[in-house]
Structures are given as structure tokens and as C-alpha cells.
Length: 72
Image (cartoon, rainbow, N blue to C red; front, side, top):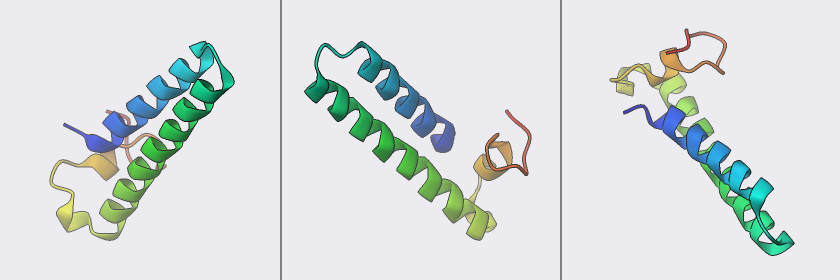
């Protein structure tokens, strides 16, 4: 499983939940979760860019947002 894509998917899901949230407190909570998921995705991708030997599943190459790889 490609964690970077999974983390970004979870961030999108949190943002979708925020859009449907019945109150401001819950909306803020979902937005905070989305930020954390996006941060995890970025940190993981940054690690693999710096240490390509650790990227056994080609996450950095398959990431559509890094500008170097093809979308998978």
C-alpha cells in the first residue's frame, strides 16, 4: 500500500467531513485532522526523496504532486 496516497486520501475525507459538519467546533476538528494527514504525507515523501534507497515501493516516483513521477 502506498502510504503517501493513503494519507492524502484521509486528508481529503477529513475535509469532506468538515464541509458537512453540523457545527464550527466539529468543522475545526476535521480541518485539524486534515492538516495532520497532509503533514504526514509530506514528511513521508520528503524522507523518500532524501533516502530513495528506503522507498521500496516507489512512493516518491508514483506521487503525482512531487513533479518528478508519473501518477499511479
